Length: 360
Ligand SMILES: [Ca+2]
Image 1 (cartoon, rainbow, N blue to C red):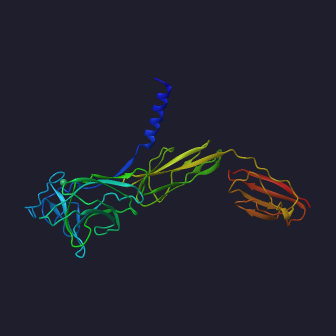
Image 2: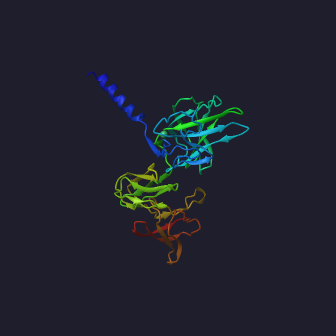
Image 3: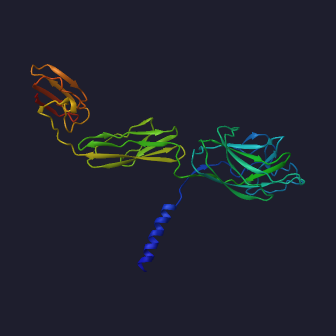
């Protein structure tokens, strides 16, 4: 096989892998509206949002309502009467898992409209998202004008919030217009872009010195998190407000991946990079010639680590300065020329004692 072909196959494989789409799924219960055909009732667990949709074909008008189900035995029928009557028969369902704010969602649904003695025309279906049975907080999608035969529609939408209800609502344009919308055979799941998440994992990166240990810091934004794991730590521990994965003592640069899983299986990951540095030996000054104008008047310890405790004494043994977390900020500008003594206790529990001279 020529090399060019092999290269082409390789590039195609990379392209295929990179463009493969990944979806999470939200279940729709009873997506085919299966139940006992009857007027003014919708099959469980669908709920009536605005009275009164029907489970069809229910022989409400047997001479004309002769549309068989698109899938199974029954479907949902919704009457609509445009302004000024504003009559809309609507159904809603509480989702097991909420929609995901900002993510691309897709579902399929079969739709048609039913003619009644030539008085019904067209009509469309709208899908809303909300937070209760009656809440039409956001119009998510609207179909084109329907036909008298079943057609499958693909609804794609992006919710502005994590709505936990969807509402199906009939719509017809114009005034004094009637229609009767039929809906059936919804996809059993709403597909959500796999990169979406309801919770956000946050891990903090940090630098340490070789020989030190560190407790990895992790937080989660959102309230639906149920599980968290660190990929480089052999733990499978559960969610708490502040995640505490324990302590790690790497001797080389490491990356620890935090994965938060929410109640519906969507995940969010973040990486904590731990950079391991070799400790620089402390360089403690022995002579200081304070020049205040250039700022060279500080007792500056090169290589000082955090939480280092420093005390400074005069030649009489009187303590002039103490800090439990010295920041290289002690000024000798006001000290007379003399000999002084220091005690330094570093964060790794090493003690250093010595003297320095202020010279003027
Ligand atoms: Ca059905």
